[in-house]
Length: 363
Ligand code: ATP
Image 1 (cartoon, helix red, strand yellow):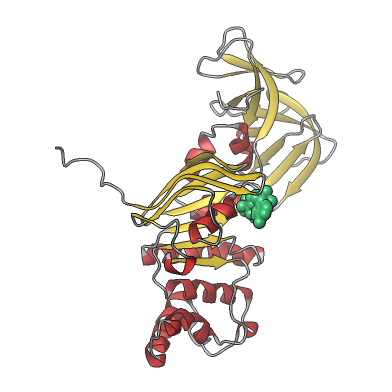
Image 2: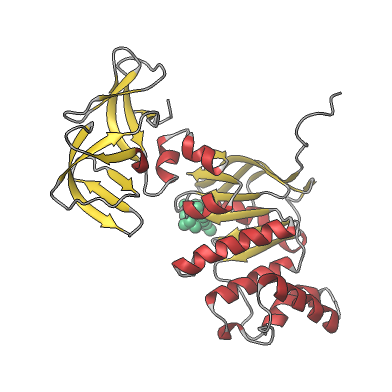
């Protein structure tokens, strides 16, 4: 045998052929997913796609209708939630209001019979790790949202679980704190060498925090991969539209007679070279990311388009065209345009996504 090659990864969580029915409703359809030890995996998808159901099944809070769940190599289908050795962190924090921070943190130790002074020392250590030093004797109502979230994290960490399961933990925080906390959670994950599964409907959160993103849709996994893999190589129009903000632009088009270009079904638009072969005459949906549309001099640009909305954040300019369908253009330059103007738009070569018009699968 050869001893060369990448290290063999260890699977910490294995979900095989998971089915979940709520009465007649099929919420999870034969879902299989392997999660490597030490990885940070995000489950994303629109409301109702089944991501929380999958996480709750893993935690044992939901019974599954079929399939096998393994944690650290052991089948845990019939193991009750408390004994699964996973720690769940919720959006609502689920802190005990009548207990101090220290008591909240050490609750799981105390019910195991660990002595008060030993538990207190653990609480002090966790407080250092999670930035709660000096707050141990406060009650949850005396904490900010971010601090409560840290207590919820600390309470999970103190149990030293085989995996951390997060269910939209940052949804109750304001935008700035959310951005801060996502870095904090990721740094904690790295420091602890933890395995984390993180449910969110916020694709930016998934993209920025996770090593591996799982996009779900209607109870199945539509695609999984590294964040940039999903961004650059979406397998379907659904994933392409879900990952990326502002969202990818979609336009109807037709592959040219040579099979090497695509014509946009917009008056006056030039054909776009594909750099590869597609089926001549095929009806497609063309996907163009907003940053691959470049505002340019109308005299030389590929497209001349009326502008409906101009939004500037200072660092970025977002232009929305008054076309059907409308297009979004993102510029890091300041663009001196206003509603009603006509702008030139060039299309960055080599960034044309194609989806079959009917199946919506990537071509
Ligand atoms: P959200 O982001 O809105 O939380 P989600 O992707 O997490 O969505 P789930 O909570 O997993 O979605 O729910 C998946 C589907 O199962 C939804 O259509 C939901 O209505 C349905 N569902 C969830 N719980 C139950 C239940 N107890 N009884 C019946 N249907 C349920």
